[in-house]
Image 1 (tube, rainbow, N blue to C red):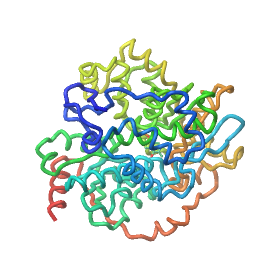
Image 2 (cartoon, protein in one colour):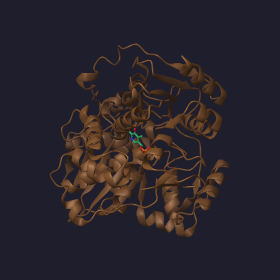
Image 3 (cartoon, protein in one colour):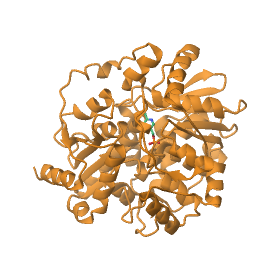
Length: 462
Ligand SMILES: *Cc1c(COP(=O)(O)O)cnc(C)c1O
């Protein structure tokens, strides 16, 4: 299995190389040269398997011979060992035909643990056998950073630097990044917003001298291995509701388009998905684009679902690549236009996107109302991101088809917003109960590439 860049100008890589690299050298994102498919029998055979065995079967065709079967099974087992639910990704019924896929039972209480814990274990095996060391940098609007720190803390051959927008993440998110005291993890509070953090990370990857000197590796949602890890729960949940005999739909709270893109891959692999619904908050650039209004950046408006406060949705480039018939030059052109503020989507590409994705948005008031209503109707306390998705799912549902809405974070990660909406304060799970007492370690830094690069260079020299 080889991997190609969405901009068509970077070398083809193996799975392992693409995983260790993250962003392609032409600025593009790696995607598999072909998408492997599963037959209906293969899918039916997943019924009753553990989450780990399902993960092995879904991901195996994508990793080729990167790891032998025993090693890969052991990697998967270690990755999900720290989850506190035996099913890993349990389904909960909200009403007759609407289900919540709970993706928040991992160590940092958000779905990003599914990918990050796996990547941590894969990096460890890869780097240890090659005798190498890498520097991981990531930008986070909140949940990626804590998931990365949790996945890589204490590992011998990795230093981790996480950039987050100062003052724009929740206290729980910040504390999850600033309280681990392992010497190899560094939380950087940038004077800027999430898009600034993401731009800094992209700029470091495009500074080839720096990139090679510190052996930069990326684990942001652009990393193909992360998308791959997320494909698994689309299969496990659909199969438990009767796939492949029965179709299901999914609604996904979306920011960087990684999670929903994993659903698209599941569909391309042969999972019978009826509707794939993109749910955005008031930062609705994706919804506007999928509604035919072009892709035009506006200001990022802080919301109660901060992990979706995004104007540049990096994984959307992968969807555009397919929508433009895998024409890397066309994608590179669009991304150049985006630097000037935005682009129009061609008629053919828009058709493909609209055939594949439905979309909707939720305002702040609608999000709060959904938290209240769902607590009343199903005794389920939603985090604001999940509430955005439940609101959109209710609008986009076909009553004849089961709808699975992805619940991407535990409500206790956003306690103030949840309490303001519902009157109920969501407590942290017992294993994290002392989070508010632990001491914090963080470096405040200017939104400036040179400042960030010098800091990283100094730290890894120590
Ligand atoms: C990251 C995140 C999202 C958005 O996921 P993308 O893959 O970036 O679209 C939604 N909800 C929560 C809680 C998140 O942490």
